Image (spheres, helix red, strand yellow):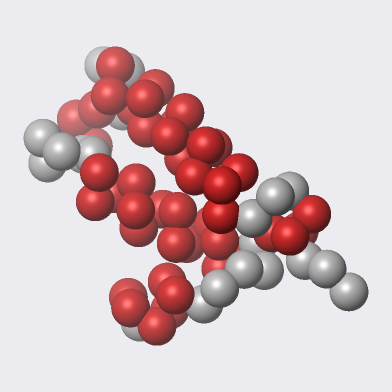
Length: 66
C-alpha cells in the first residue's frame, strides 16, 4: 500500500509546495513578522521534513527534532 507521500510524488512535490508557501510568507505583511529570522531557509527545511513525515514519508523530522 502506498502512502499519500508516494502518491503525490514524494520529496520533490513537497519541496515545491513548501517553496511556494515560503515565497508567499516572504512577501506577506501579516505572516512575515511571525518568522523573525532573515533567512527562511531553515524554517522551510523543517516544514518540508514535517510534511514528509505527516504524509507517510521518511521519519526524519521526528528523528532530528524529537
